[in-house]
Image (cartoon, rainbow over the protein chains, first blue to last red):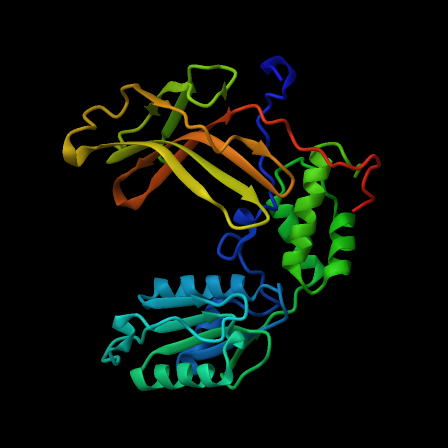
Length: 211
Length: 139
């Protein structure tokens, strides 16, 4: 194929790509009356221990990223462990975490995907943090014994607002009706909904499917 | 507002390059204010976009900084040149896409920074189409 035959137009970015919707890239949308300040205060009042509970893809990691950013802004040292693919135990603790905390605000251990730990590993994590004076903040599908900070329950209105914010102005490759259909199919999994929107956007961008 | 604008220009207006070809161009900073960059980095890099985690690799990198005397005049146009590699080629798939670009990052006092990119294509891999005769049903 010579250069004259190929499409030289540089492709536009897909607003639903993982890079753009990963935790930390988009703000968590709180339910009425809740805020990051309120959750941070609740976490501190509970002795810097807490859990974020919700089903798969419902925004737990996004909320965790939002909370950790607020905690870091308060000079907290944070260590994050992200568990995937049925990891039943944590990797080795960093050396500085093995030193018991003395004075100042405690460091925070954050575990995204806490439900994947075996009961034995989970018990050891709780004991380790308590003994060394570290805070513990986890996300989990199943409620555990830590104080409940927030239960994620995504709603269509929040997804529509998110999609509006992600789409460039005037871009109508996906419509509110598409969002509604995909969310109805995948609810409460926002991540899967966004994956569906990614694919739909790609097809429409190529003229393979009409809006 | 920093009052700075980063201008990147590639010599090849079509922005299409082939493996082994030279990528050449220049960049400069336009400034209406007295804000002085502390450092400027130029890189030619590729990154992926898709449903999975982003992958990225820097092919060419240059840094100009005040602290080592290589950034005497930040507004002076600077040429860059590098031989492009054999892979990865630019790719416009549905599940994953590979982008190439020249990227300039300007570091200002106080930890602020600005970034500008000039995209280009490496190779002429055709855009991926869905291999079904009929349109997919919505959505």
